Structure formats: structure tokens, C-alpha cells
Length: 217
Image (tube, rainbow, N blue to C red; front, side, top):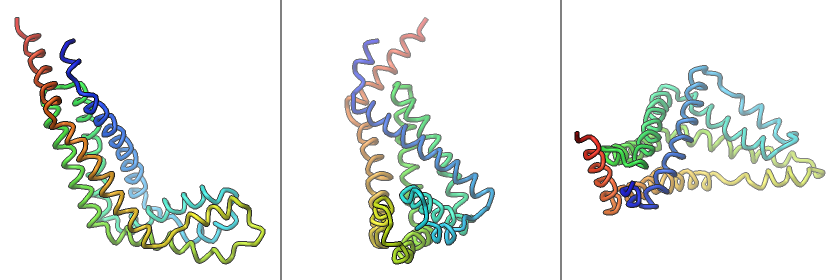
């Protein structure tokens, strides 16, 4: 149809990106909820002691970081659980709204803007309320430095490379802040900008008119 030629490329690119972020967040929230429901806290200390002997230290380090994050969330389950449920719901809304916006469905633009705003508000709220959780898991990861001196001189290059990715506490804190600003706020702000451009509005208006004409007897 002719109105599809009016669909801006940046609208498609923005909504595809938002859809991918929504799917990733949905999967992450679902996995975290399953973990919080079971209530089994991983033994981070045991993992840390076994880290120098790991056959694949880089993968073991990544698993340790994720385990530390889940343990910190589990210790603050009364706060983390409702926030994760909200993330699950709003991520699902994001996936649906972005898919509808790509096709220009009536009301999809408004729904997508509301979904973007709701997810930004949740991200900022979670960042503030889960400050203690963030500090707890970062502290656990930073403690990996305590096992570095125990590495044998014959450690493989792969093991040495794994230790090099262990960075300081302040760097982890800055990475979490950068993620909030760039991904949780910045990318959604760009998506919102794409939805409010004149060409995008013209596309949705063309779809609306085409739909009304199709419905006329």
C-alpha cells in the first residue's frame, strides 16, 4: 500500500531496537523471578575459592558475577521481587507496543510512548531503590582480587587474561551508571524522538485514513 512508503526508516530501526531490548529484558526478568521464587542463594564464596582452578576462567568469572548479582537480589527479595515483576510486565508491554508501532496500528504510537516512559521510570526507580543490592554484588566481584595472589606462576595465558578483566569498585559503579544513562534512558529517548517526528506522525495518519476507508461500505 502507498502509506507504507511513508514509513520512516528510523522508525523501523528504533522499534526493532526497542523490541530486542524488550525481549532481552523480558527473558532476564522471567529468569530472575524463577530464581527469586526458589530462594536458593548461590555460594559465591565457594565459587571464588574455586576460580583459580577453573578450566575456563573467563566463563567462570562471568558466572561468578551473575551469581553475585542473583545472591544480592535474593537477600533483598522483598524489594527485588515486586520490581522484577514490574519489569516483566513492562518489558512485555514494550515488545507488544514496538511491534504494533512498526505496522502503524491506530493508537500504537501513543502506547509505545507510554511504554517507553514507564520503562524509563522503572529503570530509574530500580536504580535508586536497589542501590544496596548493586553495592553488594559489586563488592562480591571486587573481592575476587583477594584470590589473585594465589595464582601459580605457571598460570595459563587464558587465566591471566581472566584476571585482567577484574577491575576496581569505582569502575563497576561507573559502568552501572553508564548503562542507566546510555541504555535504559538514552536509547529509549531516541526511540521516543523517532515516534514524535513529523514523518512518523504523517505515517500513522496515513495508516489511520487507509483503515477508515477500508472500513467504509
